[in-house]
Length: 214
Ligand SMILES: *Cc1c(COP(=O)(O)O)cnc(C)c1O
Image (cartoon, rainbow, N blue to C red):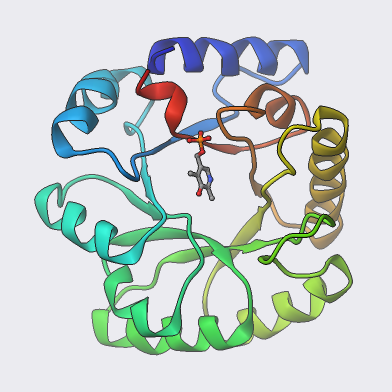
């Protein structure tokens, strides 16, 4: 697999779902990949998506180090946000996995110093034994609390359970329905193992890593 093949898979799933081509943006997850690999497997294809490919990192120090070397890229942070690592989020335009109001407050404070704030998505808990994410019953309260901090909440993010396609489809459908109920337009869902199902369920951002680098 390579980036063009993943894109073709996204386009095919969009078409199957009756969604216009280009409804979904591919976020290239570059965690664990060195700069040479990122250049060869992602940046070389930048022309294939309007605005190029956002680069997704899941560890704060790795993000800081890579963003310093590629300052012109669009950086997304897809990992859990630790309060003492908020300072590394300065190059980031979108935080995918905000989980509580305390994180939002810390981010809003830092953003004031930076003169610009990243947009955020709220991570929804997927119902399985998973550590991260906001319980669906608490999402609307957390959403209201995060909005209070002044951050721009653009949507929801979820990680489906691995190895159970039917359960993953249910998680995608439930997350899409809740985003719709909350009036949130952006849906970050789908990884190497499940992105076609995520696209069929309405994802607007898919976070694919491994498949781009094979
Ligand atoms: C690593 C990671 C991805 C990408 O997963 P792949 O299986 O490599 O495509 C997507 N989202 C999150 C939150 C991740 O940590």
